[in-house]
Image 1: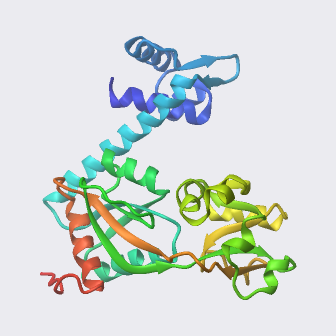
Image 2 (image 1 turned 120 degrees about the horizontal axis):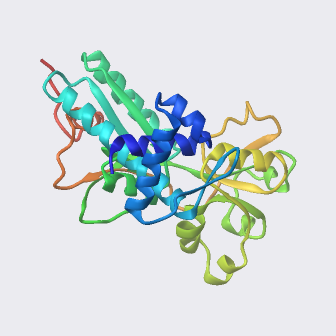
Length: 300
C-alpha cells in the first residue's frame, strides 16, 4: 500500500469521478483504475461502486477514506518535522482545540514567538474532546486543548487559569430573555440545541436522572455557527459559551448566562513518553510562561 495510491483514492473520493481525479493528479485513468483495483485486492474489500458518471464509496470505502487521510496527514507532518529539525524552529504546529474564547491565547503565544524571530505556521483543528484525543493519539496533533475533564495517565495535563461561562443563545423575544440569567430549571422544558458531547457528558451531571430522561433535544451540533442558525429559525435555545457569538452581529438574538453550573476550565494536553516537535516544544515553553508556570525563555 503506497502513499501514491492513497492519494489516488482520496482524490477520487473528493471529486467523485475517476477521470477527473486522474487528470488532477496527472496520471492516466487506466493507471489509476488498475492501482485502485490492486488496492481493493490487497485489502480484500470493495471500496467503491462505479457508475457511468460518478463514484460512490461503500461503507468500507468511507472508513478507508478516513484512515487514508490520517495516514497522508501524518506522512506530511513527519516530513515537515524532519525538514525543519536541523534548520531552525520555524515550521508547523498542529493543535486540537474546542470553540472557546480562551483559544485567543494560542494566537497570542504564536505572536510572541514571531516577535522572538520564530515563525510557526499553526494548524488548528476544532474538535470535541474525544475527536481531539483520537487525533492526539494518532500523532496528527502535537498538543490538544479541551474544556472537558480528562484524567488519564497517558497524558501530561495542565489545568489552565482560563474559564468559559456557560449560557444560552436565544431570540430576544423569547420569555427567558426577560431574565438577567437563567437556571437549569428554566431550560429543562425548552427545546435545546446542544453539542453532542455536552448532552452525553455534561447534562447527566447537571440534571437529575428523571429530568435528563425528559429533556427535549431539538438538535445537536459540533460547530456553534450551525447552532446559531437553528436558533434564528426558532427551533430552540442553544447551549454555548459566552463570547462565541456576537449578538450585535446577529440581530434578534441575545445571550443569557446559565447559573448553577461550574465554569468550563481549559486544559492543555500532550502525550507522555512522546517527543514533541521543536515547534511544539518552544510553543509549550512560551505558553507556560504566559501563566507563570516557567521562567522566561531566552531566544538566541
